[in-house]
Image 1 (tube, rainbow, N blue to C red):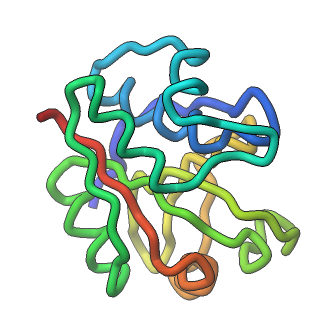
Image 2: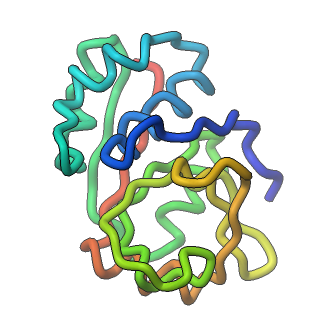
Length: 152
């Protein structure tokens, strides 16, 4: 599966990974929104925001599906339809995070050769890679939550 061409954006503060992910996906959909507006819309606070706050993006005229996945196949199906997937992870399971724990949102842009490919807003370099097994552990810790933002 080819990687989706999602431009990477680094989060501006420790607590705004969700806003950075929303910004990446909205940019992919060619919807321009000021980052400060996303911070307000998603109600980003000093320790972040609830993953479900992504539904507030519907006020921008997009559709937002927030759901619990059953398997990585759910993510793959959305990628195959050309849509990046925002996921909620426990980074303690990820080697590239050096097993440091934080609740974190990131954008899946592809899955190939047993690797999940992520635009992780915490890092300046992208994409990041992790094994499907590693990803599944990190994702399972956060109830397999994912979100798909699409044009309405």
